[in-house]
Length: 258
Image (cartoon, rainbow, N blue to C red; front, side, top):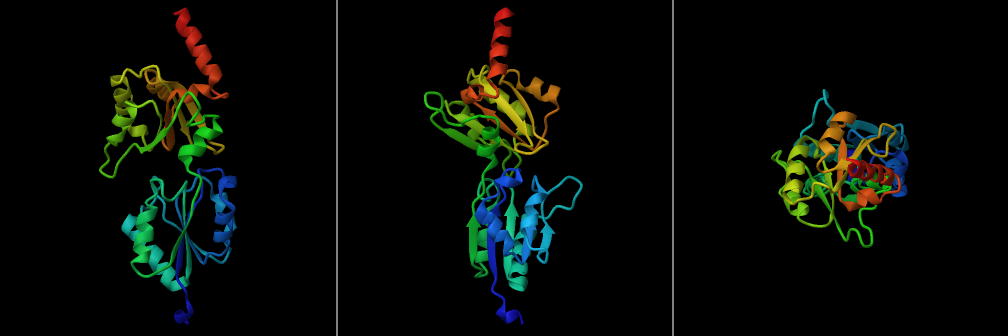
């Protein structure tokens, strides 16, 4: 019986949390899955697009839950593809933006299993957009950096120091535990007044936001009890947002009064 099984692995990006931000191609791909291996997605409503008969395996990392290592996840993908055929690996955001998707693809291909990728909407772009923050804007920002706050050896990426020297918008994912280091690097470049927004659980009903400047953002985080998962957006475009403009106008008028 197993001889007729045709293994196939498709990485699907689930988007940043709002279930409506899953692509149509993602919906169609999920509907054909025999097995779905899914992360700690911001919204389980995405799983309703998978057949009821599909085997669903949670392989994400949640506090207090068993954590699969990447090697174990790779092996699960291959074992299920060889046993059941069509495997969908569902990952939050976009699978190729700090999602380790390429490692999973390479491992599956080393067994001769055909692989496909359905890109997802990256939280690095969508979460700021939901707050009206345009990462690029004519006359304000010509480029943007998307940087992981925590590298595989648990350190802050060296790219943050380089980004702090530029005029680009800087988006830092997984950086909350390194916020004081990030602030210091921008202060070294005399960027203390640069606007910052920190958005927790972006695009979901649990969304929380704190806005300030490099010099004030740590106080804002403490006052608003902001924590991971959150995205840090640094740059002049933050105060250009129609949603956040009022805060910066009030902030500047208070400074003038002082």
